[in-house]
Image (cartoon, rainbow, N blue to C red; front, top):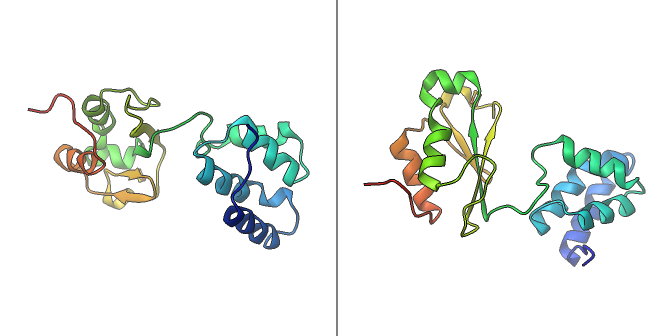
Length: 164
Ligand code: FES
């Protein structure tokens, strides 16, 4: 089924286009807006954006595949991004990703069977002084310990695995 933005989303995209000198320059924020509605950048989203911005489909596809923040397949209701860069690792975050994998029963890049969480790793999320940290959707969770990670995951509705 072709992608069609809601009237509100269409207005948001019109507003975005009004802030950029040309349509190509607005490619990133328009893709973000469409992904917010659709959950991921499907072929239909890419085709719609290409047509709306007068760009080739291959160009938009290239943008989507270059940036990790664009989802190339359906994702869970929540996205958990664990920072894996050195400053967080030095502050005890080395095992955070493994802890999340164990608790969620999935590997990095996978989504829980109930569709609740997609687990990802990320390079530095610019919160090094308060690491180890992870981003859940648009929120940062900082100074994490395994216990605190469990609390965060539980607050999302996750049933934790391997918990006594
Ligand atoms: S290294 Fe983790 S936020 Fe910078």
